[in-house]
Structure formats: structure tokens, C-alpha cells
Length: 365
Image (cartoon, rainbow, N blue to C red):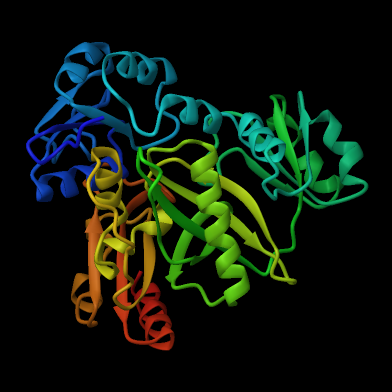
């Protein structure tokens, strides 16, 4: 594929906040942008040159030299139709693996990647037997994200609580008493060149990311292994684009893959302000055949999600009075509980300074 230089057209399937940040980096670099989403006022459409409804996928494809998707739960049929007209990176073959947790988990296990022990169940009835032997994390096979469709069950009482919600295909994983949750972002171009970002430590609540620290405070062995896993998975998937791999760090410093995302990731938002090349620019470079130099972390950083808080709920005076603070809002009109409305990047010289600022900002909410 020839190199796509600025003035080329990049299409984004899906109009959420990830699409918005891709568009903003495209505009900075001089690329034309189009968004495919049913909502003409979605976050990405607010900043793109053009927006198309999925019913008009032909016009969207005609407007693009290449396309990507910003979320794994976009319509697979629409994405495949676009791919029949113009190159989509990563390919929809990767998207189809990710859209179903059964296919994701079996793909990883069949290729020797380290994953927790798991069972595929037609419904939740089989969990009752499993939970008598081990604690279980049950995940519905389709449509789950940000804690939706995820159930932690440590005893029969927990099972009874969630029984009525488990009448679909399920991946039941053995509960892992991990030391830390980490993630690694890896970009790969068509030639097979890769660029890997620093390992990040993540803190979740009920499956949704609260905040991340970069770099993660982990040993060199675990760091090296995390890089290897992310790079090898990108190669195995024959990925052109960007990939985030979320992992559990165990007490013995071994790693298990929790899940992967073939797109920019929430835990990589810190790269917008703390790295010389953001994850969104790196995606563009990988797609378009531009040089992919190894990204540099310029300072210690944290990312704090703004969950369920609108503009009027934020104390801008106090938050912005702290040095090294960058606020990114997504332009969402409706505020809902735990909805991602934006994020705050926190920059500093030391991990201690970062944590002090993070605690301070959390107190302002």
C-alpha cells in the first residue's frame, strides 16, 4: 500500500470519544476526516469535516483513502461493507475476533498466549458447579464493556444474585488474585514495524477504569514480558494499526492476558500530553505508512477518568490551579452515572508528586 500523506482522507467508523481524539490528531497533522455514526452530534462528528449515517456507508467509503474503527462494538456488517470499498485498519478479521469474548479467549488460548483458566457455557447454569470449586468471573460473550456484562461471583449467594442475568452464552474465568492490573499499547504497520508504549498500571472499579499511572511500578522482568506479549499478539493478528493488551500481574511476576482492544485505549490517554507521540498519532502513522519511531515518555503521568460529571460539576478553578494538569472533555450532551465524560492528564516529575495531585483532584469532585 502506498504511503498516505497529509491531505489524504481518513475515515473513522464510530463516533465516540476515541474517534474524537483520532480526528483531532488527524486535523493537527493535516488529514481530512469523515465519521460514520448514526448520531450527527456524536463527539467525533463535532470535530470532523464530514459525518455520515451508516445507511450512507457508500458515500463514507468514497470520502476515505483508508478507514479505522474507534470501538469494537461497531456494526460488523457495516465495517465489512466499508472494507469491501476501502482498506480498514485494523482489518475486520481482527474486529470479529474481539467482538465476541468466546472467540477472543479461544483465539488467545489456541495460540499459546497466557490467559486465566476458562470455560465456555451456553448459559449461567453451569456456573453453579464451578463456583463450588473456585471463584468465577463471568462475562457475557457479546456487547460487554466498561464493566457491563461482567459478574464476579465468589460463592453461591453471588450466583443467585446474578442468575437471571446469565441466560446467554458466557465465558466463565477463574478469578485471579492479581497483584496489579497493567496494560501495554503496541502499534504495528503493514511492513511489521512495531512501536511499544511504556507499561501502565490501571485501577478499576466494577470493571470501569478509574485512573492509570505511567510508567507502572513493576520489575524489569515483568516489563520485558509485557512488551513481548503485546508485540507477539500484534504480529499474530497481522495487525496494521494499534492494539492495547490488558494483563494481570501475579505475585510471582507472571502475566495473564485479561483482554485486548484493537484500537486506541482509555489507559493510553496519558500519551496525549506525556509522550512525544500520542497513541492516536501513532495509529495514524501505522495506518498511513509514516515512520513509527519508539515513543518517549517525557515525564511521570496519570490519567483520571471523569465519570458521570458534566461541565457544571467540575471545579475548574481548583483543578487548573494545580501545575501540570490537562483537561480533555468529550462534548457529550447527556450526563449519566459512570459515563465517561472526559479525562484529566496529570503530569509531574515523580510518582509521589503525581499521586499527591491525583488525590487532590479526586477531592475536588
